[in-house]
Image (cartoon, rainbow, N blue to C red):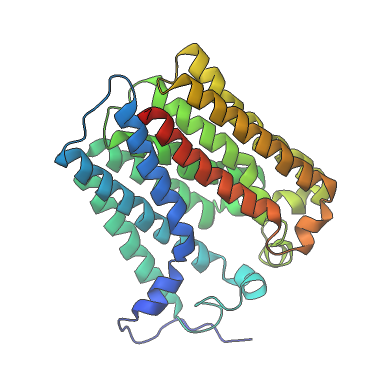
Length: 308
């Protein structure tokens, strides 16, 4: 087993820093932020896109990606024992990056993200600061909600679902009314359950690191039943919001999108419940891929529905 290095001479190593940021995971928050802003453009009353709005959306999108890089870094630092089992090739457990170097780089990511958020407006900065707080609670002891069952899901869903969408909206419009929070609630509710799909394959490392995730606490089969409804119910709120006037995008597009995603989620739920034990046997179970694709489809679909 590679020795964990606390200190290492600091030098610029872009490829390693890029790997540490886990670049694939940066796409979803960047897209969510941009989608939230575009949705706000089309919301009543529509907002024309000038150079200032375009700049805000660009800075906000970059901020979301950098903030998630900081979150990934913090998670890797405090998940060291977990990653030694589940992800031994990552920079820290493999010994290619020092622990203090990782801490410094994570701080840089968070500071850059907060500066970018401040450059957009105070609303965006406040939401980014709140997301940073939830990220801290998720990873860092003594709170470390990642080790506390449902609290882990909640502290993922709020910043990466609800606050992300509202932050994107804040780049364009005020957030002191129901619509942006209703949209954020849909995405937060989805992640409240769907974020557990990766926990099943990570059981050995999570158990070694003292993390009591849903499949560890309740067992694979019961945890699968607990998360399945969250692939369906959140998206039914889209046609409800369109019919009640809470959502001001194209009502037909929102209804079709919501019902389509719910049907997709019903199929994924059936996939999960048909063989729950397979979730723990397969590192990249199809349900995780579908969860990611559903999130991307919902982000793009919301933006399109508000531009029609």
